[in-house]
Amino acid sequence: MQYPTIIRKNFGWYKRKFGILLENLKPHQKNILLENPLLRDSAKSDQFLLVLFKVYEMERKFKPKKKVYKNPFTEEITDYYTVQLKSKYIDWNCAICDSDLQSEIGLFDMDNLLCDDCHEVHKTAPLVDERILHSSLKFRKFCQKLLKKQQRKFISYIRKSTSLNH
Ligand SMILES: [Zn+2]
Image (cartoon, rainbow, N blue to C red; front, side, top):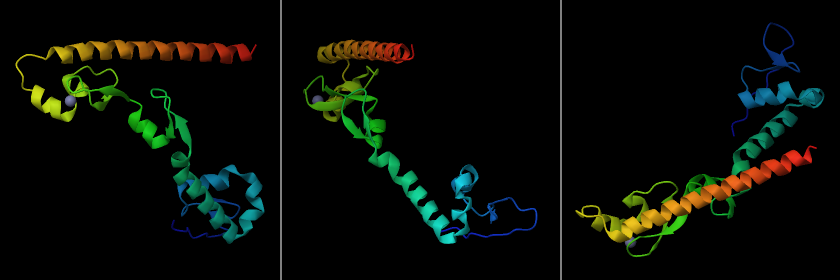
């Protein structure tokens, strides 16, 4: 992180907080000053402010990576980026060779239900292989079930949280 220069001025029309010029601070650094009236005394120390900015910056940078999330589709506990990546995908098997793959929920095309090798072979076939049709149907049913399960979960969650308020 590049440390900002803390400039203090007690005169003129400059926008400032605790006598510190705001214009050469980053937006989040400005907000720290503007939203924390309790900093009035500590803000007299440049060193304190720079450490505070640094801590805040590290928080912002590392928070999403460190925090763990429950992936609603696979029920795994993973970090944020993995959830983002995988939330649309579930474990499935290639319709032809049965190898493991990740299929995108709600997509029933051939390339979503075949591994790369089998897709390469089957994409130019004049007739769609029965196994692919079967897998597509199975995948459709699976996605519908998943959706219903999630809706039920959501409804029971809403019920629970509203009954707590009574
Ligand atoms: Zn395959």
